[in-house]
Length: 130
Image 1 (cartoon, one colour):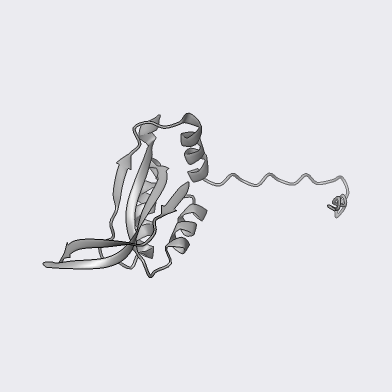
Image 2 (tube, rainbow, N blue to C red; image 1 turned 180 degrees about the vertical axis):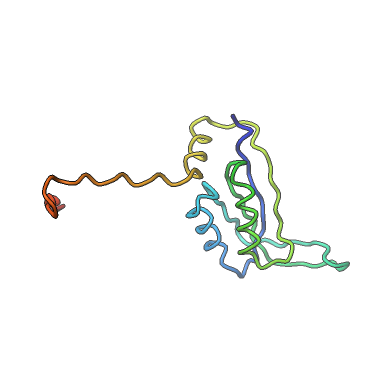
């Protein structure tokens, strides 16, 4: 069961809106949870030069089934030409937590159909909350 779940790592420019990215992929059910680190410094080689940038590490909890759609969305939303995208399997975890990941990334349930009364246009008044 645990092999269906993964952690995806990426980075985001520290001066960009990582919160908006996180909210978008959770709203779109591509992730159950997204953790955003405090800004950090990354040192890396890019096009033959040693670079340094302020970034945020992003940790995404999702299912293996959602990874391909998440990759596509990451590339659409990210400003980097080659964004970090590392997928790590979750070897084990609490059954309740893993089930929550599945539930949070599954297709949104259909809204139940409203029952119609026998009379056209008739509706019961809604109780008022106090």
